[in-house]
Length: 235
Image (cartoon, rainbow, N blue to C red; front, side):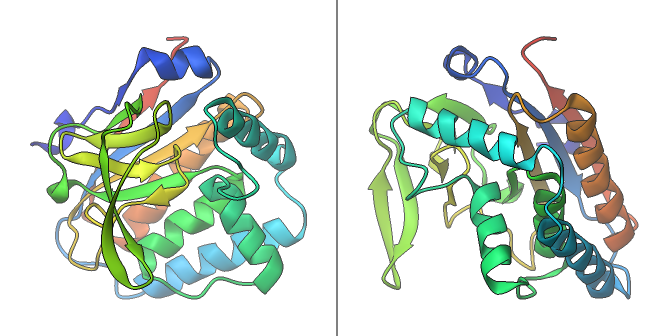
């Protein structure tokens, strides 16, 4: 699969559920080596984003998180128990005041999620079978997860919104929990990122979030090759 060929597939059932769903998809190949100050670049971005959250920004944050709660309830999830990744991350920062370092690339996309109040996922494309797809599950799709320190296979619930590929679910409840198979590691070199927006997030902010992630990746990994797709049912 070439870097330019990765185009996520959004099932029409998702647009029927949330016609306001839009996303930015970034396919990234890390060529060469990371910048010498990659960790410092990511740490600075994360520190700024944490401060933004503590200051109450951005202006659309509360409304956007409310949109995600409503979306989760619409397919049968309980957002108080299984919140969107954006809400879970913000709650953690508000509670702890910081996030521990998890590697420059993960720190960077967490910073973008916090700064823009948007769910951001990062995946290892070399572990994928076929294209990423966003669907409503039949209830038979396998999902690999750690439970009490043991790798376990679950199945998605019927009607649940999931990201998947031909091998199974890669992220449950839209953007709540990522599977083990496709997680980014220090060895990952072909990456895929998805930034997901609903109605309350301005289009300009979604575009800016995609640009912030792409710019940060280029600073962290100067020879990276990035291909961007805008996913919008209105176009």
